[in-house]
Image 1 (cartoon, helix red, strand yellow):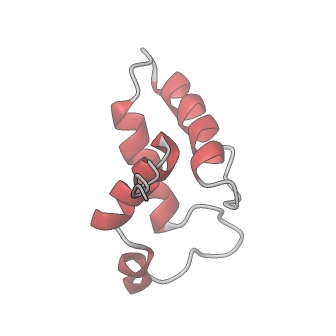
Image 2 (cartoon, one colour):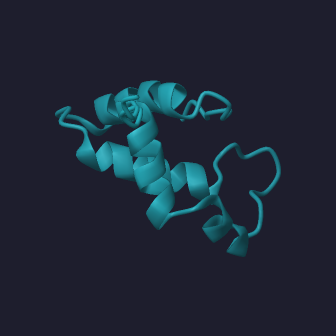
Length: 83
């Protein structure tokens, strides 16, 4: 009987896991929750910062829009702010 090859993770899974290695969800527990109805959490801000820094769009606005679209794919359960 042949041994099964390990199943390869998707790019999405690999990226989420790679970021989680360095910045696990527990790492963000040291900061208090956001104030009031502000939708930004430290974890969302860090992910946005990382992804925006890797985006090649020429303007910050385009990078932000691209990052929000990507975050919706990477973290579908997150409620994302619009600004």
